[in-house]
Image (cartoon, one colour):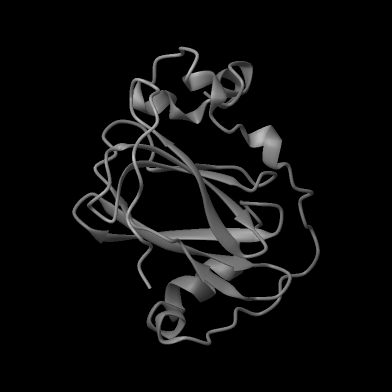
Length: 167
């Protein structure tokens, strides 16, 4: 399936059955957010905040895994309810933890998150924080901050605003 996604320009919203019309062609693509993959030693995970400490076991387990997102991050996810997923990224170079800005639920078929180790693009597939319209929500991880790029409905049309991230 990975090969097929590359062949169609990495339109990862395929899992939502997105129609490939003119609007869909404007979605961000993994190659636009290319990152060189870090292969050096991993820094120990820094458990600074209460959230970091609450998820210490999961974060410590993930910190030892190979880089799998945005060049130098390890993305870790965990369930947060029935068909709900939350998580965080750990900077392999510094050990800093950044939580995903939203939980994602109700993704249906396919995966709730699409990402690559060599790209800063991540796509949340479904409903954010159980309150956004269902769709494909595109974010860039830049300097440890998730930036919303666009959200698209199943038919490729742009979705209205998304909820404020959880703090």
